[in-house]
Length: 452
Image (cartoon, rainbow, N blue to C red; front, side):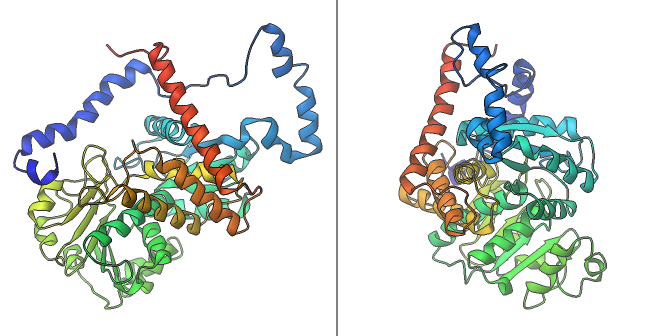
């Protein structure tokens, strides 16, 4: 049952929205974590340890010493990434620290494995210093085929990502930037298509000027959106070239200043609500609601308006409130409402494709390729007002995404290996199927226990 028909039973919808948090508090202490290490090689008897460890292991060690690239053939580096955070901007909870951020990083690792067949290790760092974070990540490079930066506060997240992408020869990405931008772009493509508007002609209202929305804006423009028709806001109002408070700190946050001078062609000024006037689509990545976005603001948007309220754990405005204000298509970052605009649809498939071609980096063009494949996957199944992007249970989206990303990396000349389209698809399908089948087998045999 959709939002429109349920909107009058607000109590029921609120109870539904609160259920995941209650279940999380019951099940996290039951399992005491979400991921663990399991063997992937056969152990027929104790003699096999002479192959996997000493003395046999010395031979692959010598081979790698002679030819370092063989580390991808003789170890799990080819399929292993680190999920790294300092806990300074976790979900919508803010600076809660590395220990409190660990459940999120474990959850991320679980999604990487189940949805993308990628082995991910959660690593929370006890430092907020960007130079130390950069140093640690570079120290970790020999063990990992890629790095996923997560929940690092702005503006240092831009600096950290840019430095690491320049200075490392394995892919480094910040999911709050590139991952969010990918899925939002996919959702925008299909939502605009449903209401008969185009990416190039749409007027965008961006609520929030953090890492997510700045990256979303960059990728939207690269995908064809008109920067002149984009207006971004922060807690003080609309970004524009006369914002002296932002100009004064442009050295520390150059990305935000670029938005001031390169968007908002009409130089609209004033409070947040003025950015909504005549907007076709609002993309909010700001503080959790409800009440961050007002119904009265939405009523000033263009006809057939679209709102993506992506804050977690509570969207900037509840879906039923937005619908009552006249929104045609509404999306959140939550899985318990229609149209989940969530990074989980992006990063598993994107990293699958990236790792499978051993790409040196993850470019915006690779993200755009993933966005269009996401949009096409949903379109193939039949898009409508409550289905603009695939759901996580549409697992075919992840190998399709992996293929699109891998092929784009090859065409850009940043892939170390160049498998065919079929080889990319077959490998992604196999890796993801094996991860799912293993999980289900462990559940069936109760190695993963049923909760009380």
